[in-house]
Structure formats: C-alpha cells, structure tokens
Image (spheres, rainbow, N blue to C red):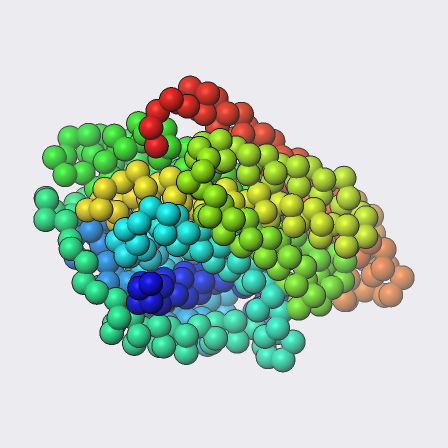
Length: 495
C-alpha cells in the first residue's frame, strides 16, 4: 500500500476542510457578529455571500490555469492567500473590512480548490481507489459544511467571533510546509495557452448574474441595478460561450456537456449545494434565535446532518462500481427528498425527532455529492482535470451561493410578509427586516411589549422557513424527475 498518496489526500482534504468550514462557520457566529459590528440585514447577507460569490466567479479561470502552470503551484499559492486573508478577517472592526477579507479568502479558496481534485485524480490511478478517495473528499465537504457551526459554537463558548478566522492560520502553515515537501510536480497541459479573456468573461458573467438574483430576492431591491447586473451577466456569458466555440483551445470545452454522466453530475452538484447551504443558513439561526439553543448546541444539532453526509459519501464511494451512476444519483436525492419532506411535518415537534429527519437528509445529500464529483472527474482526461475540477467546484459553489442568495433572500421577503405586530412603540420598518433586528428592537422596549414582539418574530420566522422547505422539496423533486429521465434515455451508454 502506497502511504504517500493517502497522506497527500489528507493534505488536500485539510485545505478543503478549511475552505468549506469558512462558508458555514459564520452561521453560528452571525448573531454575535451582527450585533458587535452593527451590521444590517443586507451587510449580513454580503458577509456570507461575498465568499461563495467571488469563488464561483473565479473558479473557471483559476481552475483551468492550473492545467498550464501546475496544480501544486496553484494549491500552495491559494493556501498562502487564504492564510493572510484569515488574519485580516480576524482583525476586522467594521462590516466593510470583514466583507473585503471574505473576498480575499474567496480568492485564496478559488486558487487552490480545483487543484485539490486534480491532485486526487492524478494521484489515484486505480478507479476503485479514486472512487473511494473522491468519496472521502466529498465526505470532507459535507462534514466541513456541518462541522463549521459546531467549531464556531465551541470557539464562541470561550472566545469572541474573530477566533473563527484565527484558527485557520496555524493549520494553513502546517499544510503549506508539508505539501511543499510531499506533493510532486504533475505534468502540465502543453497544448495551447490559458485564455485570460475567457476567464474574465465568465467571471463577470457568474458574479453579476448571482448578484442580480440576490438583488431580486431582497424586499427593497433596486430594479435598475437588478436588470443592469442581469443584462451584463447574460451578455458576458453569451460572449464567453461564443468565444469557447471559436477557440482552438477553449478555457472550457463545452462539448464535454454532451456526456450525460458529466452533465448529470453537474446538475446534482448544483442541486445538493443549493439545498444544503440555503437550508443550513436558515436552520442554524433558527436553532439559536427561535429555539434558544446556544451556538455550541446549535452546531452540534447541525453536525448530526454532517456526520450522516460523511457516512453517505463514504458508502457511495465504496459501492459506486457496482451500480450505475445516474441511478444512484436519483436514488440518493430521493432519500434526501424524503428527509426534507419529513422535516417539514415535524418542524414543531421535539428536537430529537427533527434530528432524525436531518440524518436522513444528510445521508442522501452526502451520497449524491460523492456521485457528482466522481461523475465529473471521471469523464475528463488527465490534461484537462483542472478544467473538470473547476466545473465541479463552480457547480458546488454556484449552487451554494444561489442557495444562500435565493433561499436566504426569499426568506427575508417571507419574514417581512408574515411579521405581524401592531404597536406605536416599535419601529416596524426596522423590526420586520429580520429576526435579528426584531430582537434588537425588543431589547429597547418594556418587558411586556418585548415578549409580544419576540413571539411575533419567532412565529414569522417559522412561517417563512416552512415556505423555504417547500421550495427545497420542489427543487429536489424536479431534479429527481430529470435524472430518472436521463437514466432511462442513456441507460445503455457505457460509463
């Protein structure tokens, strides 16, 4: 047994763990952070969204750049940027500085993320070993998403919110040194050159389209900005597609999407991250603000879904070679569908019952994420593994960004619509913006009015969350039907 390749897997997985945790660790810190920095509801969304938004925009260009300059170089450079940005985030004293730090964290993450997958693909040549390695990679992604709130909760029990960023720094330093020594220089793509113009086009397209979607979901959106951003994004994406079809060596070879297994993996990646990130974003705050759990207990509750995702991801990695990819994809999503549907019905039941449904959701989503990663990476040749990895990462990051932007934005709209409280003592224009703002208003009121205001806010939160769950259920149902159709249509094609 070659121990070195499994150590390399541990190194790239450690870096991936930091990246994923940074997307979710703020969930438990968000109430304290919002209060300390006096961030508005819009700033709060940007503190969370800026990271995933910028990562999604930069991934296509930086991922394919690794094919030409080397995956090891990109991995180490990304780690260094990520460590420096973590230090800036920890020292932030205003929402603006924290948002800037999150952007820099995103640049570091986008630089190294595709290389983690490319390094795994080129290190593990055996298909079954690679499937297991990708299962572990996906398990780390799922576990990181769920453990982020737990780690945040543990840190916040003893320290202030900057600690959620400080913890990155020593880990980055250790991984950076060992990776420099152990990870080899892999062959680069000698065909053609990296196209900066294409990279810029897709970056502008992805960022502006997601920004427009985020703006659309806001209750006080600016339609001029919304339509302007959307128009710029669509034009940029159309220019990108046209350029790819004309280039001899495109940044993204669009012909790869003709492969049903590659396309199916992309669809599953977007759907699972859309549900996972949007659902967890709202759930983690509900556990604290509505149910009154401490940050640590809220994180432990979320962790149950993460642990189930880890188990599901590893199990799929083991049995993948025995069943068809498309069939397993819709089966795992069906399991997640059953879990979310059950969660809707037990929303007001005992927390232990809710946790059981979260475990079912985690098993389904964790398995689906492994299948998505394997389908995408196994259907691209070695010299284009950076391109495939960037598509895989964009799918997950873009889906997660859309999940937080759309589900988070719609949740804010629904909360404002369902919030019902009449009192001359309360500034309703502020109180109905979010439950955080409702609670801040309640702190300034007499006890009798304060209790009524808090109860009104909690009721509006649960009503809004119920609609978000329904949207999640419908999204999964649509994806399952699409995958079943693809499975039936392409069941005779070789994988």
